[in-house]
Length: 221
Length: 161
Image (cartoon, rainbow over all chains, first blue to last red; front, side):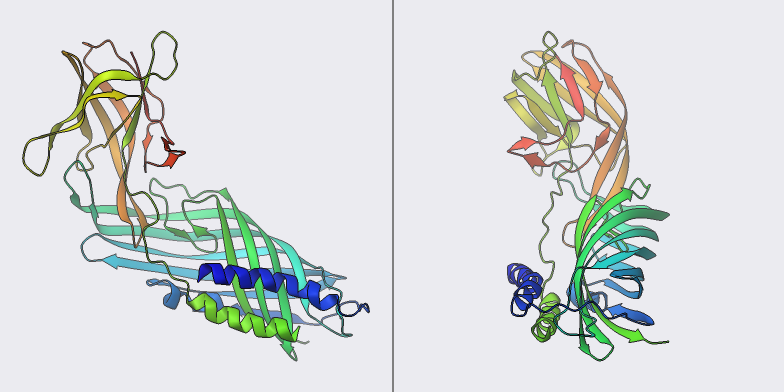
């Protein structure tokens, strides 16, 4: 299933190139007024994809100049994983990201707000984790029950490189997908690495690839 | 862009279908001991090495020997997660030394599929000196055993002989 998704993702990235090859007329991006607010549907689907996880992520972006958009994203992640014989792990936290997107696309239609963009984000996360009822297995020594990871308040900072598309499917309504390479620049300081860093991903990795799937609405004012 | 918007809707459905199912990480934690030549300071292979944990017993109740009369360049010796010291007997021929490792255990959660493991920070090492080993605490952080090109990709203790 992951290979099929990867193929479709690659095809999606090539679609703007294929579409643009059909018509040589180019129009500058429309000067989008107001702000576009969105919600990440992939975060809402977390409980279905990963048992024990739930979260949400929202974004706000605005056209600031020519092909540049300022963007802020923020969200929340809660992890509660329990195995009656081995562990009960809990994590909860918030994150925020700020950055700039640059539109690479010259549309085939006048007054089009579709985007193919590249961007950069600075992200930060504030969260806590703990675990109890841990049984440490061992292949050589006896297994040890009754262990715990004490609660700790943690922070993390990272940089993201983003590539994505946003298509105006109905007037002022957008569907978009983005792919991100995330580089951890400040690790959480704890003797036990967190399982997940909200907004970033796997707590033991310095580099993570992620994906978002947004539905957005442009609020005019 | 109509094609693109329809494709995005299909992608949303596919995303829901990708799930974690298996433990894909090593859950084995062990202290990685590498042997070096005291003359050349290069990695070396020692022959006739036997290693056994003090107090370790196997399921049948007999002493559990990790390595018996083996030729070793690298030895993987787990630390007891239920204690703060672990002692190993290392024998070459008729001579035996006792190496005692002092450490702090840190439980770590890997994933739902993999469960928890115990990492450790080695704080001190004591030894007897029958075999004239020189022990170096090269990297005190004991974690998951991983391999690169079939070679253990970590090193905690260097034993010069």
